[in-house]
Image (cartoon, rainbow, N blue to C red):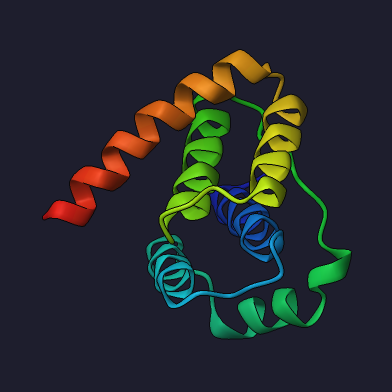
Amino acid sequence: MKNKKQIKKEHFANLLIVAHADGKWKKEELDFLARRAQEFGIPDKDIKEMLDNLDQLQFSVPLNMQEREEQLTDAIYLSLIDGELAKEEYQICLLLAQRLGLDQKYLDNLIGLVRQLWENDKEN
């Protein structure tokens, strides 16, 4: 059984994979990742190790539905943070959704909801 620290580390690794999908690191993405790393209590040495081995990172699928939805929501938010959902980012989110046992319709609905949240955050 995974402990909470390992689950958060896997969640963060999944976010790194999404952020790296379009091959660009934008300031907004880095800021979001830094906030998440801090919230999750991930040490700098672990972050550096993940970044140094980015091409070897693999998606980890959470065991419970709440964690699955949270990770997919974070991945979508991260993908939208620069104002657009690049094709590569959508494909990564779709792959993540499928790996989490969620279908494309669910993903598309969640993208709509997250886009509304992102737009509200941007206005505030």
